[in-house]
Length: 266
Ligand SMILES: CC(C)(COP(=O)(O)OP(=O)(O)OC[C@H]1O[C@@H](n2cnc3c(N)ncnc32)[C@H](O)[C@@H]1OP(=O)(O)O)[C@@H](O)C(=O)NCCC(=O)NCCS
Image 1: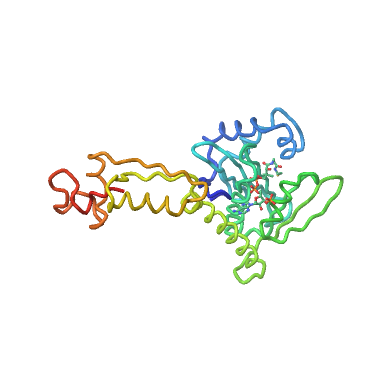
Image 2: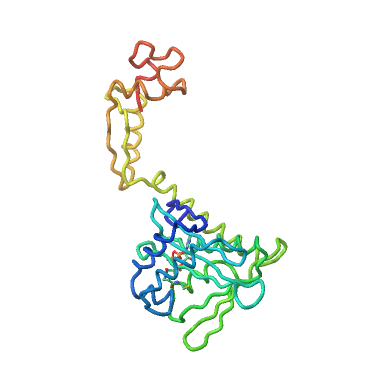
């Protein structure tokens, strides 16, 4: 889940994703291309697509984040020079920055790395790249930095067994992010900006009318309450509020119209 509660799909890259990966990188702003590749080469998107979408291998992993069928982020690692260490890279579509895509992708890469017994991830980034430094800082892993000639070498030791102390801080940070995302996903329900009451009857004493009255009574702050009267046939499909079953089931509403229990709609 992203910071606003939106759900994305994260899965391993496949050969057939090449076009989407190329397209996402080609659409990035020149600044973001420079942050990612340290150059503005026109061939960078093509090369990246080939690298990311090649056959999976033990030393390399590539994950893609999708939102509604659109590729919104790519994270991958390649073996570094040192044994059991991998170099990580990440890029997120420009319009999706700041919503937690990179953080989620990196969490998934960390899980893969730990599973494959990697001991550390490294990443090279331009010192001026504040966005990636914030993401690295927020992960909950004890990152080490070495700066030389405007380039930062980041190293994140991966917690390799369950007894390690920094595993706790990493899992705590991850749980904290998850909690915020969960809360955000419920915001539309708990702090609605508008409410539609379907099947609000004009007759006092009915369920739909009572729900509408409750909303009005509480004067939901900023919420716009819209009343949508149910038509006869909708009422027949509605739930019987008293019996807790579809209206019409078990003899209820058997004459085709709502029974006393179902008549309230809502
Ligand atoms: C660097 C880059 C990948 C960051 O991607 P992003 O998806 O915008 O990053 P995130 O949204 O995950 O992180 C942004 C912030 O959200 C926070 N965050 C993420 N998930 C969260 C959650 N569930 N709850 C609360 N905060 C969360 C992060 O800690 C970070 O904190 P900040 O507000 O202090 O900045 C992106 O800017 C990019 O593609 N840049 C160009 C390429 C590049 O520079 N690549 C890096 C070099 S390899």
